Amino acid sequence: MLLTTMRRSTLVKRFSLAFLFVLLASASALAAAPFPAKVVHIADGDTITVLRGREQIKIRLNGIDCPESRQPWGRKAKRFTADLVGMKTVQVQPIDKDRYGRLVAVVSLPETGQVLGLELVRAGLAWWYRRYAPKDQDLREAEERAKAARKGLWADPNPIPPWEWRRGKRIGIGRRMEVPKVGSQ
Image (cartoon, rainbow, N blue to C red; front, side, top):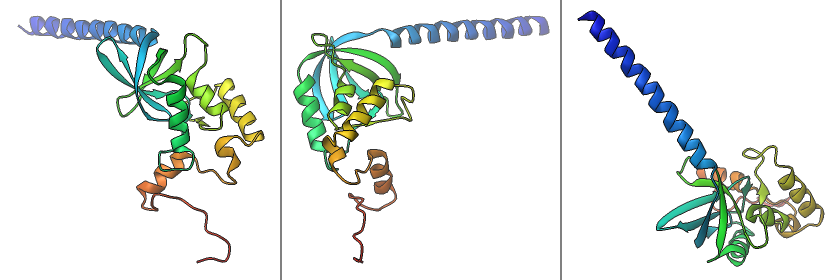
């Protein structure tokens, strides 16, 4: 009886490990496979929804962070994204899933090869999100060039990164994080 229980336990463990291995292997292979999809909604500059067959997939652009809608440059970033990829078929290269369940991906236009996130950074409408793409030299160079040319949000004297803006809203600073003027209280 004890031997049978031990064998059963060992078999269950081995089966579970084998199943987990197959599941992880197939998930990573699936995640790495690029696919074409039609852009059907633009939530903001760095979040879009695509249609793949009959499935709608919400995508967060990899390696960048656009200003929030209520931040300066937020609406322009959304408009830029809509103008570039709205209602077009794009190529989606999955990278990961974020904590909100969105697919994190690189989105490009097959006919031109343009990468949406890179184009947003080049236009000065997004920050290179170093935390999530620390080794992306294309984004680094694009941000440096946009800053040097004072493009988009870099024309502002002190642009506030969206991650700081969101943190300010969470701790109750309000919708806008403004630097107080000298001498004003």
